[in-house]
Length: 255
Image (cartoon, rainbow, N blue to C red; front, side, top):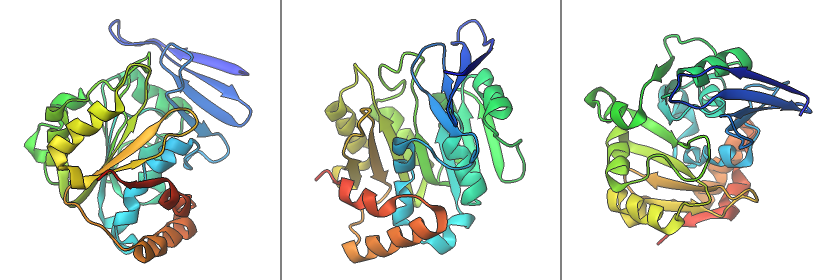
């Protein structure tokens, strides 16, 4: 790693630091585990494969309406999803992050813009913030990527949490979740999501080489024809340079 810098967090939260390797900048929370990344020459692109897959909800939205919709991230990481939704998709974008030093690091080191009429970063515990009724029924794309500094298991992963996530969504809304960790149980997490959303609403990717499995849950289950998904994937690839056709080979409904 060519360069490393640090920010001092509150006493009960991990140290925030970054490292550079080649043209990629990585975010860390006091350990070697990568919490996010950024291409330094293309800071608003998504560099990590699993983070790209977190955008799979676009396959279920009309591309012409995306800029009129609302994206929310639970857990900021390196702000890759937040920046992409705000800058590339032109969406109203809300991110909820418990560690103020992560927010500061993203603004100083990872090109996260300041809040404006379309961008709002909330420093709060996501478990509490998403219970506020002002958020309910407002989110079209919900991204959940909540890990502590040891990256052992999701910080929030029970049925009540997923039910609260479902409350956030519009009727066409979609949640994507990153599941990764030495101590996490994929099947147990799927069961909890299915309890909150219904089993027919759940889709899952194959794991990445690094062990990240992205799971998608729809507010209301749909089964688009493959031809329709292929057409939408082509639009996503041409407009936003995401490998959406590849996604169709790698994920499917769980039931």
